[in-house]
Image 1 (cartoon, rainbow, N blue to C red):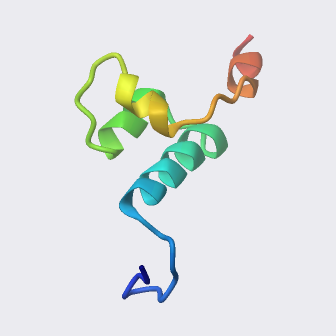
Image 2 (cartoon, rainbow, N blue to C red):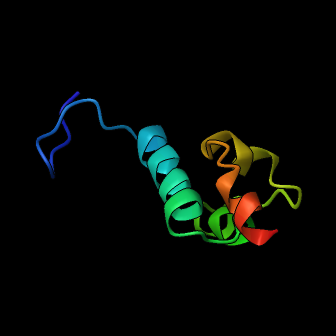
Length: 64
């Protein structure tokens, strides 16, 4: 499937959410609750949001 706006193939809504979640949390260091809000997730424990974010332990290391 080719995206009409970008003319790129393979870009899906799931891919976009996954990419945003990873970049927002791991590169921009957004709070996980803010990432969940941006993705329109309503789960208070971020179970759904965690699916979209790869674990990056450097965020934890920086906070110590």
